[in-house]
Length: 409
Image (cartoon, rainbow, N blue to C red; front, side, top):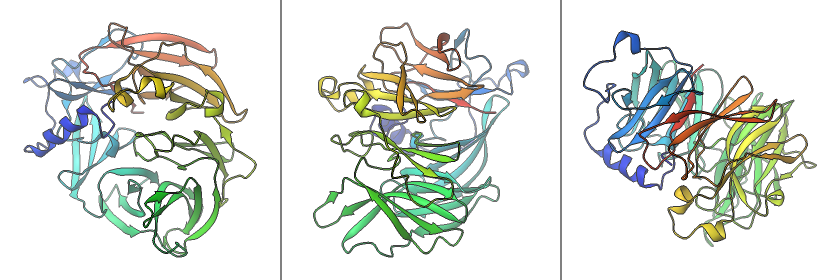
């Protein structure tokens, strides 16, 4: 997958980013798009090809062929690291770890346009682990597996706050690793882990705490739980929490390599009541227990308490080398219901390649499915109301990574 740090494509992206950067939108074709080709699309896709990564508009996900040949914006030197991308409508924000900048881009008229880029080096590492919207204009994010944060006003394009979360109460010779931040009124709820710097062991527990907002001071630990960890995402690009009926549901991501590296722990869902400062002690949805011990990653929230996940099936058999985490055909699509605490559906695909490429529109989920036995990557529609799965458009020209879908409206 393009979005994962350790893929071959990410290595290629780093090499491309070290070249001279071009901040203007460029087309796969030497010619500018004809006026009739410029659209205000509902969806977009980023397709990795042998000649670069191209972002192009999609009006219809359910018919025809989508191809970057001769069109699209080459984003290889703009969105250099998929895990550092945050999207909100037509606006895309990105931290470039190679050139130390934070950029705001907008996809309109069929091309990705640079709105503004600012220098950014406020985090000790520029590989992001999580993000949270504190308001319509305040974006907060932090580096992977540490205690640092930054807040950017995306309208003014200014870094308004940065630093380390309050270390009050942190045990001596221990480090906090933040995995999720959830706004809760005048506080931020934080899901984190503890790392023993002497023994170099990350404890098999999920910890919770709060800080006052907007001061970001007065850290208070509010609880700990040993049923699963880590509480939230290790990689910023993965979907890991959603709100439903007065609760925020948070997915744990213990999966080796792509998550917390805790194969012995189950993937599960905790929940936090709106306004509360700790997880609900009476709720834990153990997903792995219903899937033979397999671990899962998030794809998207569908609605009405249902979410779509990808599940790594029988990794002990299917993982023979490191890159199999991305390219081995071992992944299943699941629909879970956090209200009934059930895996309610395994989508009727063969085992496929790893992908988190999914968007939701009008209660229907659209996913790019990388089936090694198909004649291309297809978009499939899952209608949760009718429990129907329908094949849609084919995406041509892609390399081994699954194209990434985006909903822009």
